[in-house]
Image 1 (tube, helix red, strand yellow):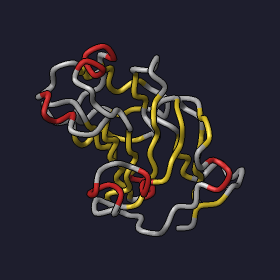
Image 2 (tube, one colour):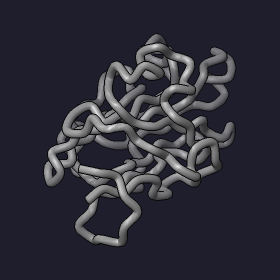
Image 3 (tube, one colour):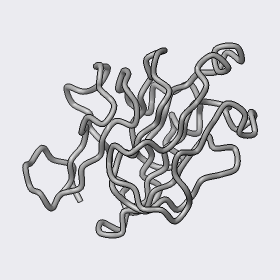
Length: 163
């Protein structure tokens, strides 16, 4: 599977889960993500006013830890699993400041709200809310963000498209 810019309606489209600055995983201030130990992907450094994570793909929610700092979505049609990880060290909050808007085993459409977080609490705790979109299964090739790298993106904006 190769990431392309095409108009094929049968292609996988991956959108930004939140508005902010789109960056390479290598710019994330966490070794696990920056060294792509969990998989290939990209990150969004969210705008301070944003606090709702939306589904970057259409699929089935397969993981939602009690800490609500992450959500996994399986896209069966493309045999892919994607992890949306919200913030760095947010698991330490044990769910405080996060509200799940989706449930495990539910089907979500791209752009549907998944998780809401409390911006004020995250600021008080001085947490980096960079949000990663990681291909954990079914895709392991480098992702080239092209002109989207280090640029502002909108929540739900399609960033990658694959045949």
